[in-house]
Amino acid sequence: MSPPSPSGQRNSFIGNIAASAFSSSFAEVVTIPLDTAKVRLQLQAGASGPLKYRGLIGTCVTVAKEEGVKSLWKGIGPGIHRQVLFGGLRIGLYEPIKDFYVGKDHVGEVPLHLKVAAGLTTGAVGITIASPTDLVKVRMQAEGKLPEGAPRRYPSAFKAYRIIAKQEGVAALWTGLTPNVARNAVINAAELASYDQVKSSLLSAGMDDGVPCHILSGLGAGFVACVVGSPVDVIKSRVMGSSGLYSGFVDCAVKTLKAEGPFAFWKGFLPNFGRLGSWNVVMFLTLEQVRKAMRENDLM
Figure 1 (cartoon, rainbow, N blue to C red):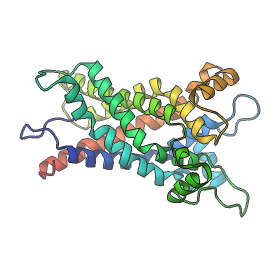
Figure 2: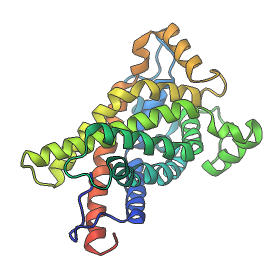
Figure 3: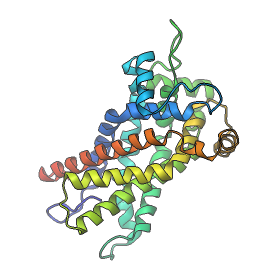
Figure 4: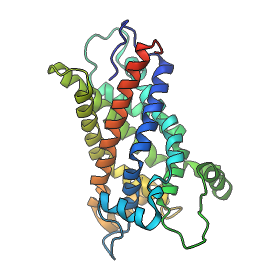
């Protein structure tokens, strides 16, 4: 995914982590309104009764009108915390883990299954560490408009960590860890392996390693990740956002299937792709440029 530096050496480990954390955080700031819309659509009740949120743009407009434009950036604090930890680890560790799996004597293109294995590994490790930030982000995004004068359940991200730990126990910060690991390991593998694979194919076809190549590779990564990751993403959002409605991953999956049918697992697919597609384009474009600048200035 990342080309060797001009000297022929790979990007440094610390440099990779730093570039990945920055690029992931930047993409989070740019695209979090789409993520807020996605979470609201996923948590929305099934077909019975009128639907409050309809479509990506409609949901964004409804939230902005009812709660103010700033509400589209609800959860940006823990979102940044998440990307510094999770984004830095899952992307920064991808190259060294892939190299470990393929072996030091390997020559040529890395097999796709080893790219997938590397993505699954770094996604699982990263989100296990960063899961509390994801929980707080979803809880804050799920909170709708409150009655006049009513205090917010979570005034800020840092207070949210303390409130959840005090009221529900420290272990509650890892609520939904199983679907979160499943979701993020799968999506991480889909994103990084498909970006790696699409980019390699485009370069082999004669395309320059520039912005058009990175945009196409990022869109491909976002689409693949959305298709394979939507079911676990829906379950993750519901388990984390429900505050006790579901006992776990399997219980949520069974109840969702019974109440809404199999297509419920792809609820919010278009906003999810809008989010993942745009997020991947912004993140990978930024990452490629940051790595290039760091190499040119001998920072990697």
